[in-house]
Amino acid sequence: MYKNLLALILFCGVSATSFAQTDSLMDMLNNGAPIKKESVIATFKATRIIDGSSVENLGYGILDFRIDHRFGQLNQGSQNFFGIDDATTKLALDYGITKWLMVGIGHSVLNKEDDGFAKIKLWSQKTIGMPVTISYVGAMSVQTTPAPTVPAGDKWNASNRLYFTNQVLIARKFSDRISLQLMPTIVHYNLVDSTKFSNNTIALGIGGRIKVSKRIAITGEYYCRLTDANLLYNGQQTYNALSVGIDIETGGHVFQLVLTNSQGLTERTFIGQTTDSWSKGALHFGFNISRVFTIIKPKEFK
Image (cartoon, rainbow, N blue to C red; front, top):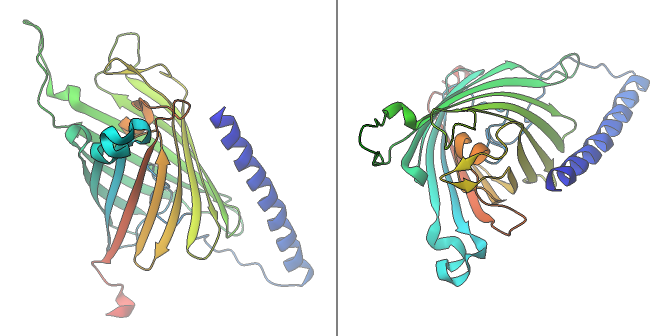
């Protein structure tokens, strides 16, 4: 139900914007205005849509310090102060090595997980010609919780804690207000709950951004698992992750308010191991804070 509703909303927005862009282009042609071939910028405002990556990269020499925070379930009531007593946090540092390559590391309180990633921008959307921006993201994470007790004769391998993610990000900025992104994804789990599940979960993510004012935008993100849709995590049923948010830009900060059914903050958790459901009211409120620092100044400012 939710994915159909989200798809309908995005389709309507994209269709309306496409017609608007066509009218604008025809106006330029009728007026004789030259059309320049330039790269399209600011498809999204941040390097993340909500939890997942966007096609945006940090510039060369730019450091981004991120704090991502998710409270517990809102429907826990006063017992856990509506989720505030059951919160999780991720601290991350991302850095732009070149204009097309950025890397990052992070630590999440949930499962004491450390992760790292690299994002490569392969092609950029152009005003003439290339219709989309395409990027690749490769990530790895490891849980650092104590090893579980296993039956006598069995062996617990450290590699059981490793997870790998490969994503292709395909995005188009339809206008100054509307952007859309598709995220074909493979998440590899070295260890799964049962032999009936594959170690590789294939998912298709869809995300979007609608700008409502100069500094505020509405974002959405949904990951539909094409395989292992019934994957168990610690014996619990899992669900597809659906998140909505509000981006607020304040100078060097980008502040995001989030409502989601996933408390996880790495790809392996929110794509394949989300155990809460929107239909059951198991939602998490949260926020992301991003602060950018210039480590290496561009030559023109030296």
